[in-house]
Amino acid sequence: TGKEIAAQEIHAHSPRADGPFIPINCAALGEHLCESELFGHEKGAFTGAVSRQDGAFHRAHGGTLFLDELGELSPKCQGKLLRALESGEIRRVGGRKLEFTDIRIIAATNQNLALQIQQSRFRQDLFFRLSVLNIHMPRLCDRREDIPLLAKELLKQRHPDAVLTEAASDALRQYSWP
Image 1 (cartoon, rainbow, N blue to C red):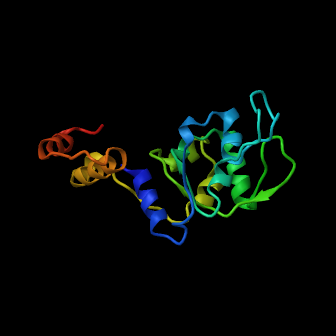
Image 2 (cartoon, one colour):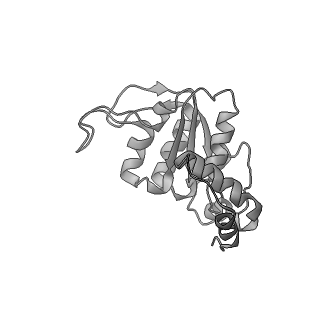
């Protein structure tokens, strides 16, 4: 649907535009790495932690943290995220010092979180904490007029010299986008 592009645009047209935009794919966060990826870790906190590392909350300080595929977070990670959002405090894995970061969170998912809440797969309190302003973005196959715009933007970002031909644009519009 172009969730990350939409999140980048919200960030770019906000008072936080001069701060960092840090995207995190929650579907790629394993239960054991989630806390370290979000909050960082201290040297020696676990096998392979050879140096102190900042987490996404640190890297997004003064800017925006984009949590994509939020519905894929493990229950344990949902609890850790909720605690950080409620208290504003984060602590690196293996650390003792509480830290506070100044970030805005934009979260996105293609999951039906209301259904996941009913099935006890997503925390209702986390959902309400993050549901300050909801924007529904229809599936790409339901808004084919956006496809050439998105394709041109992606080309510009990844291959600035490339040109989207009319034939390529037509082929993209005709694809089923399941």
